[in-house]
Length: 148
Image (cartoon, rainbow, N blue to C red):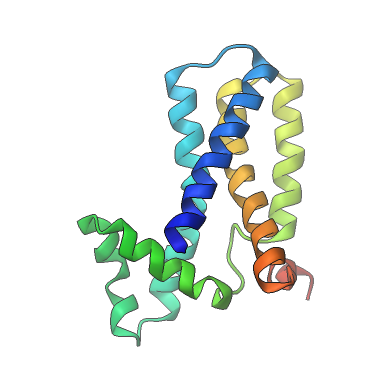
């Protein structure tokens, strides 16, 4: 299930990349790589949370090592299973998302494609996570943590 979740992230990110291509009219390989990298950058937020909040669990104590060794499927499976328990993440909250939307608009106005692709990658991931949380858990309450 979890690898399917991340495959959806990758697939939808590529569709969004194709759509954003029409905003600027051209795209370089570096912009593509930056977009894909930034699409998965919020996983580091989850990884950091898991490493700092679940240190008593033997499996999660080694989660960083699992990533570094290259056993990505096991690490992604773990992160997906614990995802509902993650609270107060730095990149996974509505104020950050709204600020990101505003920043993306400014980048479009000032024609900054490199930064645009980087921030658009972040936005795609966060948008998919919000939709997935609503679909899977029936609420996006954990996204509102700065408000309460």
